[in-house]
Length: 315
Image (tube, rainbow, N blue to C red; front, side, top):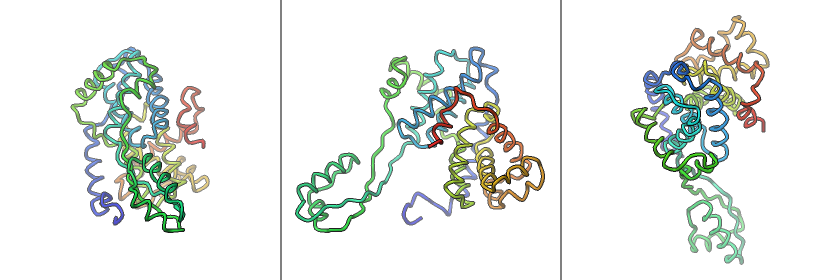
């Protein structure tokens, strides 16, 4: 991609084949059997309510949310914990994920500076640059003031992950700084410092691009995929398989009821785009059971305590 050299399209398939191979290392089973102090609802509440709200409030990317949930799940699968520390574990997992995933963002903004308003224009430019963390020089402001037409400036914004104090504030100071830092050490050691866990959203974005899905379809798939975070029986599913199933369900749902034939086992093979099968590597036999679980999840009455994802996508 000429505009962004990091989008290495010629290596994309090899990259995602590598991520699929790494999934074998991070397959989870039902870890609730080793957590006598917890129940599934407690873990799900932290994953979908607390972490989802935190992601929205701090405008973190989707990958951060998914990685935080994965880090939480993997840590809970290593040793028993008490319920009082569950929020601390979730907060620390989000801290780790945000450090790993937050990256620079380039924004293109229109700037209009009129002739004769160099002083005001420079003030406006400096205020804009202060917000973006990239100061505009006086010379640039003078140059911009010589045109009547709005210009678009592409400025790189340095984004930092939320700091420890942010997490303590969200937790209403229920924990001390030393406790959060100590938990960060515990989690990283338990995971062997390997937190590059393949998450469903990364595959979802790739597969949606491969099938040229519309933004409406991708948003629906995102919604289904985030809802799946609160389903304990979907925890063992590979991220690539879950992403493929979410996208497939979104694709056939946009066919105004086509999902019914998929769910009832009749002619569902016609609803799987060959390009999705090629890039994901999954056929009907692998996708159908997961799609049925997702369908059951969507048609079940919502839990009044788990409305964060539904609220997030309702506007």
